[in-house]
Image (cartoon, rainbow, N blue to C red; front, side, top):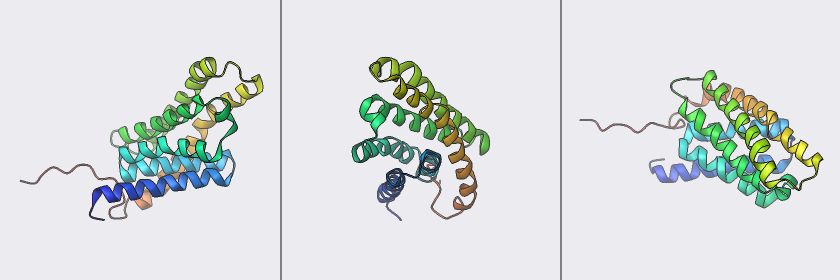
Length: 183
């Protein structure tokens, strides 16, 4: 495609739709989580940071509106936490794509997402917005939005690394840096 705006919107919409559909199918957290993280990384590396961040923020919002996850209905602040966690994954992977090309950058991104979500859940979201939640729901939130997020991000990053070795060679697929003007 020659028009960069059309290409951005199309790529972002397709990847966002894939994320949402995956979460509506209910394949379980250990399949859906890595798949969503894979798509978030594909969005960033194929469409650039704006594409990745757009999918990172809009995906949880659309899933919340369409599916009404019980934990998010009980504590809507978790929606913002998921958005932030996704943004941490995308931003770290994008920022570290050159200095820590490959596995180290992806590991740092996955650990960053898991750590951010764990800290947000335990020290911000549940204490400030989930005080009235039953203990069982709090424990489930701590498990789901902590170490499990790190694990699903790591699995998604590993799959991304393998897939990226193939798709980055497709002309026009990988995000291009701004080219300097030729003299």
